[in-house]
Length: 475
Image 1: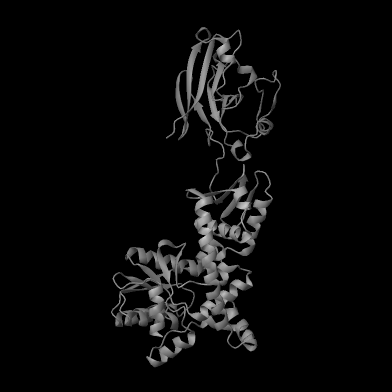
Image 2 (image 1 turned 180 degrees about the horizontal axis):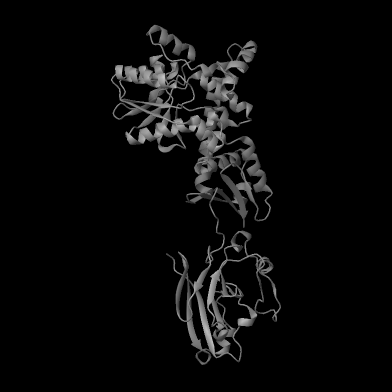
């Protein structure tokens, strides 16, 4: 068994020069992992998290500490109220405990400058994982199961390693017996209220009636799927570099026509890789999520945002696929986006709209400007306004429900602002942040970058002109 573990550690690129954090619960698998890694001469740090889910959990912590002390290995322990956190986050106890455990392990790994985190998953766990993913309808990425070494969403530099992944539980139990090791037994492992336990305790005994070697077969299947997955992944990695724009941390952009020209399996993998890149929980990405994404991309509703997982969304705009995290706001148009209303001063000067745009004001006499110059203005971000109609002050604000104005060029006819946006093909997601220059009574003077309102135009009776310009600062 030691030779088997040693080979796995070689595959993990584990080294003896820097610390290796070992997650130890006190159960057979993690205790055997600790002993074997110690025998092989690794520089270990024992990390134990008390989830406070059982009355015996305190005794488990003490037991692990005693083993670490006996082996003269540094011991770090913490405890969490898993039940309360599970309720607050509205997640299952199983998922919450797992998340908390890995958060803790990788936090310790970073603190101690460890080169990896080792956990005690065995070949039996691999068989269970493969079967669970098959029941969920997973593709190759799920059927391949767990990897001996992998980078996870918990840390993009420190790997998670599983040195016992090719070791069966029967070998672990034999090692304990031969070496007089008496690990703690978690009684909840025999309860079927948790999904994995139900598969282990109820489904596997039935499957073993059909094939006593079902676990070996599932482990073999995972190895076959892993090799096939590697081949596809090489192709996908190449496509990823050529197709995907990852210039923004929370949003991925892919040309839709090029994406749709790819084989279905490549499209599925690109979607999955996108979710993983955006740090969605890859263990909870289901095949149905991938299929729904592809269906939406093939038949998009104009401007519609499609929620795919709890934290990932997809939107199509002008032949670009946008895949983004919850909370990210896509800005399709290079316009001076505004969030809140701002009272403006009168006269000359400048005011900041946002980090990249300013609004500049300059008072001019009509004699300084020719009527032809004003009439032939082609710059959408320059407005000439009758200053004498604006003596009560100005307001810069985003649109409001019920906004109405009279666009220049319509002979004084009015229309709803949002109908104007539709006519001008202003993207729906941009409309609620489009800046409006208004009177203090909320009358629209200028839809910045579009049109001024008819009543505020310069006429032959105008004496003073307020010249307003939207200036991009390129900060």
